[in-house]
Each structure stands twice: as structure tokens, then as C-alpha cells.
Image: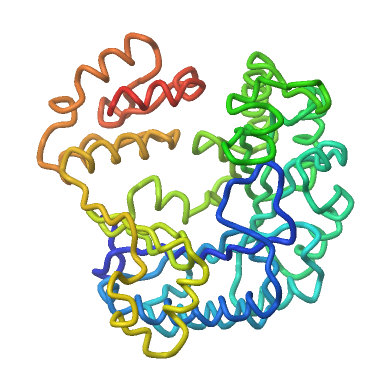
Length: 401
């Protein structure tokens, strides 16, 4: 566990479960809502922030991530109240990274300037594609021109750390259109780019259209998805292209200019403690994991007044509480850490668990090393996935379970 000023580091995640319209591929905990509901939720979330603080007095907040949903539905005043609650209730690092996810079509210059004054210093903007037809097929509320306007407004508001989210393997997408999206995105000069491949999730409209495996295009009414070969080609070309443009891959799907890696997400991969607040948000205080109840009405009721006493709800709002045993903690160390291209530190594993890494995972390492998926570096002190291992990371990481 990394420490700052003798305290454990803490990342805070605030979940905003509202959106203007649900995207066709989305299975996140989010839904449209009116202004009154959003305001009641912000009030409840501020109360949870204050209530949880007493359990983290030995922590220092190094990152805050406001995610969703669409956090950019919040007014600057609402965003300010949330961040003020964090600053007043926790030991807050003055240099903390404070990120807000934003959706084009919900932004303007005034709102972005207000977010900057509220303390947001990093934006994550969901573009997904630079082609309007592809955006329409996803059910996005914006077009590319709207994104460009909002991106320019963000720069003018003073944001110097911006991530752009992109998505490949979209309905009807070709390699050429994907490379064009990458070209246009890199030309804007964002500090960070996240590039994910579309996954068909059960229970979404896309699942009804394409089947749970994404390969059942049914009647042909909908644009077909790229086949596995094209999907893989897009993935490979992404790393090659962005490297040439000065972005290095530091995690399986994340690229950054030097010094602009997302500190909040790195905390997840390094198993730094994090506190998730808002409905459905996950938390981790080693060795315990838990989630907040996902029912909005229950959440609003529980935090409906200043006291928020547990007697109102004997079960509280924590769900799926799990205390990890030693083996589970070791597995997480490996599986999460190997997502990063720098890999894992074997001396750190020994320090944390008191047993040499290869005594626990030797057979898995030998198998994957023989297959060319794992490699040692720094005179054998680190272990990382090879380029081929990253391509088949799900398979490789499963060997450690």
C-alpha cells in the first residue's frame, strides 16, 4: 500500500447514474431523470460523502473521479457542492487529480468554466467515433461537430488534461473509418486516449440485435459488426498508430503522453484503496470489497436527512461485502497489475505477502512464458505481458486463477 505523509492513499469515485438518453450498447447503472431527482441525488450523495469520511481518517485523497452515467448533466453548482464535501470531510491532497466524465451535447463554455472553478482539473470526454453514422448507430446524443465545439470550449475554459474515449468494432465500421477516427482524434492533441472495442452486453438493445456473442446480425436490418479478424486488426493498428503520434500504451486499452497517465485508474490496477459513493459504486479497503445498493429510491430514502442513522435501515446500504483471503489478494495483485504494460514487481509481491512470487504462480508463469505471452524484465524483478500476451490478455490472465 503506497502512503503519503504516513497515510494510505485513497481514490474517491462518485457515481452519477443519470443520462440524457440511454445508449444502445450501454449496460451501466444509468437512466434519464428530471432535475428534481438529480438535485435530490446530489444532496444524498453529499450526505454519504460526509458519513463515510469517519472510516477513512487514516487516508489521504489523491484522486477523485466523477463518473456515470453522464456527470456533465450536473450544474457547476452541484459539482462544486460534491467536491466541497470531499475537501471538507477528508484529508485532501492539494495536487489531487480530479476527473469528470463528460458527454458531448451536455456541455457549453459556461458550464465547463464552472467545472474548472469547482476544482475539476481533468476531463474524460466520450467521443467514441468521428463519424456521425457510427455515432447514430450507437444511439449517441451528439454528432462529431458538437464534440469539436465542446472540446474547443474545454480548452478555452483552461483544461490542460483531457482524455478522449473511443470505441472500435462498431456496427458498419471499416478499418478505414476507424483509422480516420484515430487520425482526427490525435490531431486534436489530447493528453490521453482510451480506445476500447465494443462488447455486446446482455440486456441491451444491441444484445437483442446482434445476439449475446455479437455475431448474430439476424435479419440484416442492422449494420453488421466487424468480424473477429477485422476487430483484431483494428486493435493492432491502434497501438501502432498512436505510438507514432507520441502516445504510449501504459494499460491494455489506455494511451497517454508521458506524465498524463490516469492516476485514478492506475490506483485500481495497483490495488490502492478506493471509496465508491452513489448507487452501485464499488469500494475497496484491503482486504474488503463492497458495493453500494443499486436501488435509487432506497438510496435517497437512506440519505434523506442529516442524521442518516443506520437504524432507518438495519442492513445499511452496503451490498456484496467480501473479505478477500490471502490467495484472492495475490490473484488480484497479478491480474490487475498485469493489465499495465510495466507489469508487476516481484519484490513488491514478496514484501506484501511474505512468499516468493514463483512459489505461488510458478507453473502459470512457465506455461505463459513458453507460449510467448509473458516475459521478465529489470533483471528478473518484474513480469509483464508481451505484445502478443496483451492481444490475448483474457486468456493469459485467466491462468492465474
